Image (tube, rainbow, N blue to C red; front, side, top):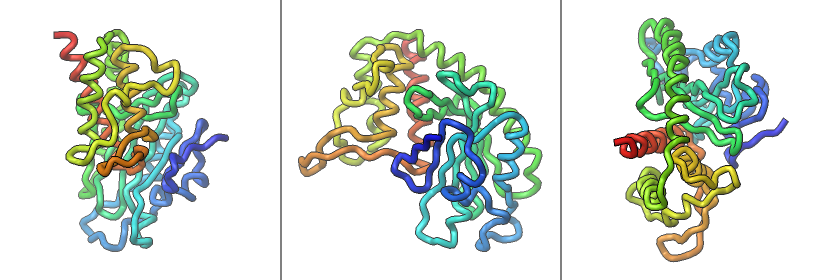
Length: 272
Protein backbone atom coordinates (compact mmCIF):
# COMPACT_ATOMS: atom_id res chain seq x y z
CA UNK A 1 0.00 0.00 0.00
CA UNK A 2 1.33 3.42 -0.94
CA UNK A 3 0.73 6.49 1.19
CA UNK A 4 1.23 10.16 0.39
CA UNK A 5 1.56 12.56 3.32
CA UNK A 6 2.45 15.74 1.34
CA UNK A 7 5.00 16.40 4.11
CA UNK A 8 2.16 16.85 6.57
CA UNK A 9 2.26 14.63 9.68
CA UNK A 10 -1.45 15.31 10.21
CA UNK A 11 -2.48 13.88 6.82
CA UNK A 12 -2.73 10.39 5.34
CA UNK A 13 -3.69 9.32 1.82
CA UNK A 14 -3.72 5.95 0.07
CA UNK A 15 -4.57 4.34 -3.27
CA UNK A 16 -6.73 1.83 -1.39
CA UNK A 17 -9.34 2.38 1.37
CA UNK A 18 -7.93 3.50 4.71
CA UNK A 19 -8.63 1.46 7.82
CA UNK A 20 -9.59 2.93 11.19
CA UNK A 21 -6.23 1.97 12.66
CA UNK A 22 -4.35 3.77 9.89
CA UNK A 23 -6.39 6.94 10.33
CA UNK A 24 -6.40 6.86 14.13
CA UNK A 25 -2.61 7.23 14.30
CA UNK A 26 -2.60 10.36 12.14
CA UNK A 27 -6.08 11.90 12.53
CA UNK A 28 -7.26 10.98 16.05
CA UNK A 29 -9.97 13.66 16.08
CA UNK A 30 -12.11 11.49 13.80
CA UNK A 31 -12.57 9.07 16.68
CA UNK A 32 -13.48 11.47 19.50
CA UNK A 33 -16.26 9.91 21.61
CA UNK A 34 -17.43 13.23 23.02
CA UNK A 35 -16.98 16.96 22.58
CA UNK A 36 -14.03 18.85 24.07
CA UNK A 37 -14.44 19.83 27.71
CA UNK A 38 -14.55 23.50 26.74
CA UNK A 39 -18.00 23.03 25.11
CA UNK A 40 -21.19 23.69 27.08
CA UNK A 41 -24.23 21.42 27.41
CA UNK A 42 -25.86 23.31 24.52
CA UNK A 43 -23.23 21.97 22.14
CA UNK A 44 -24.48 18.97 20.15
CA UNK A 45 -21.78 16.38 19.59
CA UNK A 46 -21.81 15.02 16.01
CA UNK A 47 -19.69 11.82 15.99
CA UNK A 48 -17.59 11.73 12.83
CA UNK A 49 -16.86 8.03 13.10
CA UNK A 50 -20.59 7.20 13.15
CA UNK A 51 -21.14 9.23 9.97
CA UNK A 52 -18.11 7.58 8.39
CA UNK A 53 -19.42 4.11 9.19
CA UNK A 54 -22.86 5.06 7.89
CA UNK A 55 -21.37 6.10 4.55
CA UNK A 56 -19.35 2.90 4.46
CA UNK A 57 -22.62 0.97 4.56
CA UNK A 58 -23.67 2.92 1.48
CA UNK A 59 -20.52 1.82 -0.38
CA UNK A 60 -18.24 4.79 0.36
CA UNK A 61 -14.69 4.35 1.60
CA UNK A 62 -12.13 6.86 2.97
CA UNK A 63 -9.02 7.43 0.86
CA UNK A 64 -7.68 10.57 2.50
CA UNK A 65 -7.92 12.08 5.98
CA UNK A 66 -6.24 15.02 7.69
CA UNK A 67 -6.66 17.35 10.63
CA UNK A 68 -5.55 20.79 11.71
CA UNK A 69 -2.29 21.14 13.60
CA UNK A 70 -2.81 22.49 17.10
CA UNK A 71 -0.42 23.86 19.69
CA UNK A 72 -2.61 22.72 22.57
CA UNK A 73 -2.03 18.97 22.82
CA UNK A 74 -5.28 18.65 24.77
CA UNK A 75 -7.22 19.57 21.62
CA UNK A 76 -5.42 17.26 19.20
CA UNK A 77 -8.11 14.59 19.56
CA UNK A 78 -10.95 17.11 18.99
CA UNK A 79 -9.72 19.56 16.35
CA UNK A 80 -11.05 20.26 12.84
CA UNK A 81 -10.60 17.34 10.44
CA UNK A 82 -11.45 16.29 6.89
CA UNK A 83 -12.18 12.93 5.23
CA UNK A 84 -12.47 12.32 1.48
CA UNK A 85 -14.63 9.34 0.50
CA UNK A 86 -15.29 7.58 -2.82
CA UNK A 87 -17.85 4.98 -3.81
CA UNK A 88 -16.70 1.41 -4.38
CA UNK A 89 -18.26 1.34 -7.85
CA UNK A 90 -16.01 4.21 -9.01
CA UNK A 91 -12.65 2.91 -7.85
CA UNK A 92 -10.28 2.63 -10.80
CA UNK A 93 -11.82 5.47 -12.81
CA UNK A 94 -9.56 8.29 -14.05
CA UNK A 95 -11.68 10.92 -12.32
CA UNK A 96 -13.93 10.18 -9.35
CA UNK A 97 -16.45 12.28 -7.45
CA UNK A 98 -16.12 12.33 -3.68
CA UNK A 99 -17.99 13.17 -0.53
CA UNK A 100 -15.81 15.50 1.52
CA UNK A 101 -16.64 15.46 5.21
CA UNK A 102 -15.43 18.18 7.59
CA UNK A 103 -16.10 18.35 11.31
CA UNK A 104 -14.63 19.26 14.69
CA UNK A 105 -15.43 18.49 18.31
CA UNK A 106 -13.96 21.61 19.93
CA UNK A 107 -16.24 24.33 18.58
CA UNK A 108 -13.79 25.51 15.89
CA UNK A 109 -16.08 24.56 12.99
CA UNK A 110 -19.53 23.29 12.13
CA UNK A 111 -20.21 19.91 10.54
CA UNK A 112 -19.93 20.23 6.75
CA UNK A 113 -20.28 18.04 3.67
CA UNK A 114 -19.32 19.18 0.18
CA UNK A 115 -18.85 17.51 -3.20
CA UNK A 116 -15.41 17.11 -4.72
CA UNK A 117 -13.50 15.48 -7.58
CA UNK A 118 -10.32 13.42 -7.46
CA UNK A 119 -7.92 12.96 -10.42
CA UNK A 120 -5.97 9.73 -10.22
CA UNK A 121 -3.41 11.01 -12.74
CA UNK A 122 -1.91 13.31 -10.12
CA UNK A 123 -3.48 12.17 -6.83
CA UNK A 124 -4.67 15.72 -6.40
CA UNK A 125 -8.13 16.44 -5.03
CA UNK A 126 -10.36 19.20 -6.34
CA UNK A 127 -13.25 20.77 -4.47
CA UNK A 128 -16.20 22.21 -6.34
CA UNK A 129 -17.34 25.80 -5.83
CA UNK A 130 -20.57 27.27 -4.57
CA UNK A 131 -22.46 26.07 -7.64
CA UNK A 132 -22.93 22.64 -6.08
CA UNK A 133 -23.87 21.08 -2.76
CA UNK A 134 -22.43 22.51 0.42
CA UNK A 135 -24.24 21.30 3.52
CA UNK A 136 -23.47 22.87 6.90
CA UNK A 137 -24.95 21.75 10.21
CA UNK A 138 -24.37 23.65 13.43
CA UNK A 139 -23.60 21.72 16.61
CA UNK A 140 -26.90 22.70 18.14
CA UNK A 141 -30.23 20.98 18.75
CA UNK A 142 -31.43 17.75 17.08
CA UNK A 143 -29.11 17.49 14.07
CA UNK A 144 -29.48 13.84 13.03
CA UNK A 145 -32.04 14.52 10.28
CA UNK A 146 -29.99 17.39 8.84
CA UNK A 147 -26.85 15.25 8.72
CA UNK A 148 -28.60 12.42 6.84
CA UNK A 149 -30.40 14.77 4.46
CA UNK A 150 -27.14 16.58 3.76
CA UNK A 151 -25.47 13.38 2.57
CA UNK A 152 -28.22 12.81 -0.01
CA UNK A 153 -27.93 16.41 -1.24
CA UNK A 154 -24.22 15.98 -1.88
CA UNK A 155 -24.77 12.69 -3.70
CA UNK A 156 -27.40 14.25 -5.94
CA UNK A 157 -24.91 16.91 -7.06
CA UNK A 158 -22.53 14.39 -8.66
CA UNK A 159 -24.33 14.38 -12.01
CA UNK A 160 -24.02 18.16 -12.26
CA UNK A 161 -20.31 17.96 -11.44
CA UNK A 162 -19.77 15.41 -14.21
CA UNK A 163 -21.65 17.61 -16.66
CA UNK A 164 -19.60 20.69 -15.77
CA UNK A 165 -16.33 18.76 -16.05
CA UNK A 166 -17.30 17.51 -19.53
CA UNK A 167 -18.12 21.06 -20.61
CA UNK A 168 -14.69 22.26 -19.42
CA UNK A 169 -12.99 19.48 -21.39
CA UNK A 170 -14.72 20.66 -24.57
CA UNK A 171 -13.72 24.33 -24.23
CA UNK A 172 -10.40 25.18 -25.91
CA UNK A 173 -8.55 28.23 -24.54
CA UNK A 174 -6.21 30.51 -26.46
CA UNK A 175 -2.78 31.27 -24.98
CA UNK A 176 -4.08 34.66 -23.83
CA UNK A 177 -7.07 33.04 -22.13
CA UNK A 178 -4.85 30.52 -20.37
CA UNK A 179 -2.61 33.37 -19.19
CA UNK A 180 -5.67 35.30 -17.97
CA UNK A 181 -6.84 32.28 -15.99
CA UNK A 182 -3.43 31.85 -14.32
CA UNK A 183 -3.20 35.56 -13.47
CA UNK A 184 -6.67 35.50 -11.92
CA UNK A 185 -5.70 32.44 -9.85
CA UNK A 186 -2.61 33.95 -8.21
CA UNK A 187 -4.44 36.34 -5.80
CA UNK A 188 -6.52 33.39 -4.55
CA UNK A 189 -3.42 32.05 -2.82
CA UNK A 190 -1.22 35.05 -2.18
CA UNK A 191 -3.81 37.83 -1.67
CA UNK A 192 -1.81 40.89 -0.52
CA UNK A 193 1.41 38.93 0.07
CA UNK A 194 4.51 38.99 -2.11
CA UNK A 195 4.00 36.83 -5.21
CA UNK A 196 7.18 34.76 -5.65
CA UNK A 197 6.30 33.33 -9.08
CA UNK A 198 4.99 34.47 -12.44
CA UNK A 199 1.61 33.43 -13.78
CA UNK A 200 3.08 31.49 -16.71
CA UNK A 201 4.81 29.14 -14.24
CA UNK A 202 1.40 27.93 -13.09
CA UNK A 203 0.71 26.80 -16.66
CA UNK A 204 3.77 24.55 -16.81
CA UNK A 205 2.52 20.91 -16.86
CA UNK A 206 4.13 18.32 -14.61
CA UNK A 207 3.19 15.43 -16.94
CA UNK A 208 2.22 14.83 -20.56
CA UNK A 209 -1.43 14.39 -19.61
CA UNK A 210 -1.58 18.09 -18.70
CA UNK A 211 -0.20 19.53 -21.96
CA UNK A 212 -3.60 20.29 -23.51
CA UNK A 213 -5.17 23.72 -23.91
CA UNK A 214 -8.74 22.94 -22.89
CA UNK A 215 -10.20 24.58 -19.79
CA UNK A 216 -10.23 21.38 -17.71
CA UNK A 217 -6.54 20.68 -18.36
CA UNK A 218 -5.57 24.32 -17.77
CA UNK A 219 -7.53 24.37 -14.52
CA UNK A 220 -5.89 21.19 -13.25
CA UNK A 221 -2.39 22.34 -14.19
CA UNK A 222 -2.81 25.65 -12.36
CA UNK A 223 -4.48 23.96 -9.41
CA UNK A 224 -1.75 21.38 -8.93
CA UNK A 225 1.07 23.91 -9.13
CA UNK A 226 -0.65 26.08 -6.52
CA UNK A 227 -1.69 23.31 -4.13
CA UNK A 228 1.36 21.07 -4.30
CA UNK A 229 3.93 23.88 -4.44
CA UNK A 230 7.52 23.19 -5.45
CA UNK A 231 7.61 26.00 -8.04
CA UNK A 232 10.88 27.93 -8.20
CA UNK A 233 10.59 31.69 -7.61
CA UNK A 234 12.01 34.75 -5.92
CA UNK A 235 11.41 36.03 -2.40
CA UNK A 236 10.58 39.66 -1.60
CA UNK A 237 14.33 40.19 -1.07
CA UNK A 238 15.18 38.70 -4.46
CA UNK A 239 16.53 35.41 -3.15
CA UNK A 240 15.77 32.06 -4.77
CA UNK A 241 12.85 30.29 -3.14
CA UNK A 242 10.42 27.42 -3.66
CA UNK A 243 6.67 27.74 -3.15
CA UNK A 244 5.20 25.77 -0.28
CA UNK A 245 2.39 23.25 -0.62
CA UNK A 246 -1.02 23.92 0.89
CA UNK A 247 -1.45 21.45 3.75
CA UNK A 248 -3.98 23.11 6.08
CA UNK A 249 -7.58 21.85 6.01
CA UNK A 250 -9.20 25.29 5.74
CA UNK A 251 -6.65 26.65 3.26
CA UNK A 252 -6.97 23.64 0.99
CA UNK A 253 -10.76 23.72 0.86
CA UNK A 254 -10.89 27.49 0.40
CA UNK A 255 -8.35 27.58 -2.43
CA UNK A 256 -9.73 24.52 -4.21
CA UNK A 257 -13.25 25.91 -4.17
CA UNK A 258 -12.12 29.32 -5.36
CA UNK A 259 -10.24 27.78 -8.29
CA UNK A 260 -13.27 25.71 -9.29
CA UNK A 261 -15.47 28.79 -9.15
CA UNK A 262 -12.92 30.64 -11.31
CA UNK A 263 -13.05 27.83 -13.87
CA UNK A 264 -16.85 27.96 -13.89
CA UNK A 265 -16.71 31.69 -14.55
CA UNK A 266 -14.24 31.20 -17.41
CA UNK A 267 -16.60 28.61 -18.86
CA UNK A 268 -19.49 31.06 -18.63
CA UNK A 269 -17.52 33.85 -20.33
CA UNK A 270 -16.43 31.55 -23.16
CA UNK A 271 -20.05 30.65 -23.87
CA UNK A 272 -21.45 34.17 -23.94
